[in-house]
Image 1 (cartoon, rainbow, N blue to C red):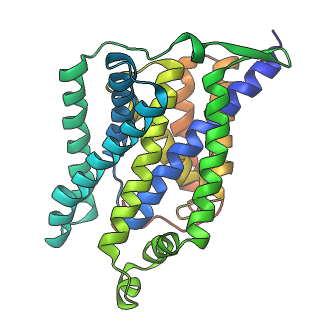
Image 2 (image 1 turned 90 degrees about the vertical axis):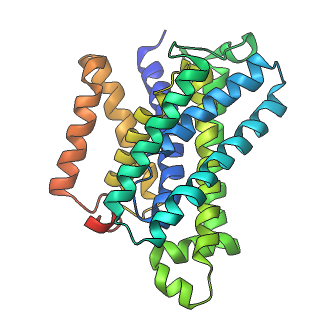
Length: 294
């Protein structure tokens, strides 16, 4: 095995996951202006819905995955319509919404544990666990799919935001919600679109990670935190900057695991976040995070 090639491919796989997570989270954050931490539960639900449809009901992937995405989006829209929106009508602060989102995450995580238990599960079958050798490095089929899907989804998202009417409206409310409303854009409707798109991507992340490394009820939150780190060091509001942030984080994490030990990954990750917040609060490119947008 070529160790250098293996590390490079591992970095590429992690980069792809982090890019998708930060992309899905930023779509929602830029629209609602608070940290929707319940997004982590949507990632976990994507993993467990796929486990339910693919293994427990034995449905083929081309049926199981659309059902997974649909149900994940449905749960996310219910969170916005039944919980966030009534609170926003009462003019609660972003900090209050953040705390509520953490509560929602905990509730959904416990629901997952009650239904499927806390043990580690796997949705791996022979057709997705096999792989190939490239430049002396082993990469599985699901990792190849992860890399390809990440590029495709990110490019589609960028084209959607640039050229589609709904995408342009999402950009408008991300820039200035009040002005967008004055110009006739229905911000409540566009926020629902943001939740649907972000949660659809999140559910796909859950499926990909579950197929690669297995699934647990808490898997979504740790992944989400990495996505938040990427978004902050990339620069709030910077879409193309997410590429640099995801690549930087993935590279540092795998080099840390190789030269030090895997147990240092989180410590190094959040140390980098602290350094960026102190020395480069705007990230690679973007705007400064306001207190009202936490």
